[in-house]
Image (tube, rainbow, N blue to C red; front, side, top):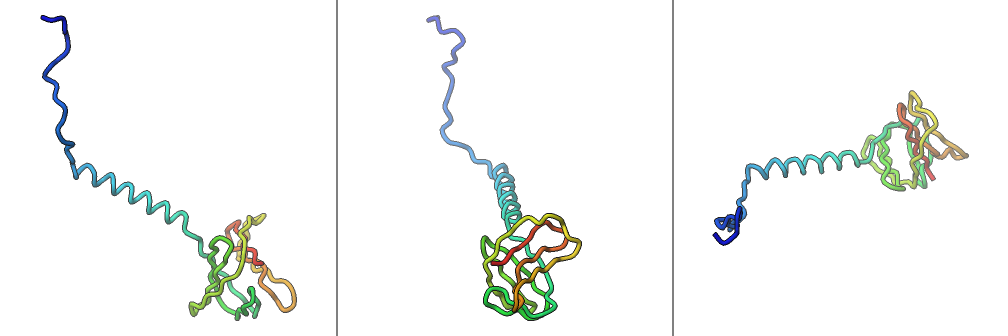
Length: 128
């Protein structure tokens, strides 16, 4: 013996990496599921409110009726029951309390939409 105890000379490096598609598919499915969940969590919330009289929102006049609101950054998109949309500058704030019913704030003459606080939330959309 030449003094090389415990070292095997029969070691071979793998020539190719073996792919096992049945093991890769669950991994990609899991990644896709996590991405889908993350995108749904970051999606903007839609809130609904009702106007009892005509009001101004920005430069647009809103008729009495039901509306939905989605805030995207500094823009609130108001949509009426016919699907007509109006974009208004707005900011989202935290309300002090959760109102039981949706609160719609107005100010000035002519009446101008100043805020919407959806019932059951602490979200307050304040219009500029």
